[in-house]
Image (cartoon, rainbow, N blue to C red; front, side, top):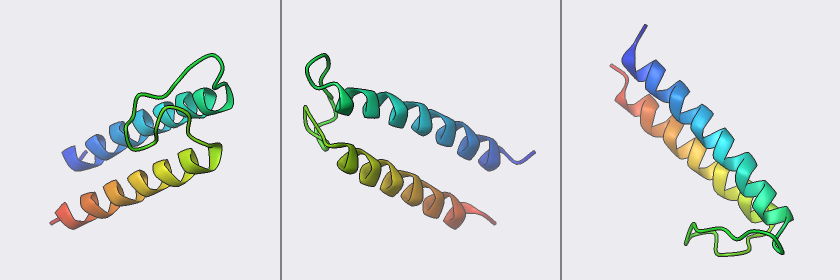
Length: 68
């Protein structure tokens, strides 16, 4: 198995877990706050989705450009 494939899978799983946690924070601003300076302390659910879709797309584009 290619190391780049394993790294990409690990990154994707980690991002999805973070995405879910950040959505929980966004839906409960009275209980928690976000520490990501790009999203701000109390991001909207829409902003969270746009951010993570962008990060995942960017990481996949970067990974694809590294392939031999």
